[in-house]
Length: 105
Image (tube, one colour):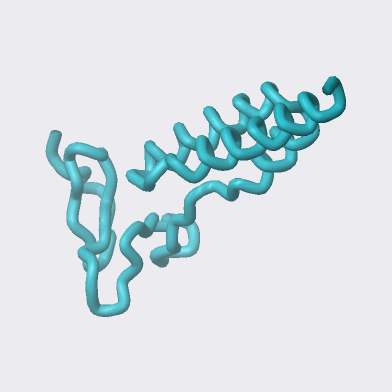
C-alpha cells in the first residue's frame, strides 16, 4: 500500500505495515506519536492504564480478564508491550485466591 497523497504530515514517514504516519525516533521525537489532523500537530501516544484492570480484578476477580483483554489488545495495536495488563490480572487473582483460601481454612 502506498502513502496517502492527500495528507501533509511534516517530518513523518509512512509505515505501510501499520498503515499510518510515524515520526522517526530521535531529535526529541517520542517513540510513538500520532498526527492530530484537527490540531495540525504531533501528539504522543500512551498505552492504556492498568488502573481499570487492577480495580476490576481486585473487586470482581475473574471479571478482571475483560479490561485485561481490552487494554492488552489496544496496547498491541499501538506496538507496545502487553505483559503489564496480564501481570496485574494474575497478581490480583493470586491475592484474591489466597484471601479466599484463608477464609475457608
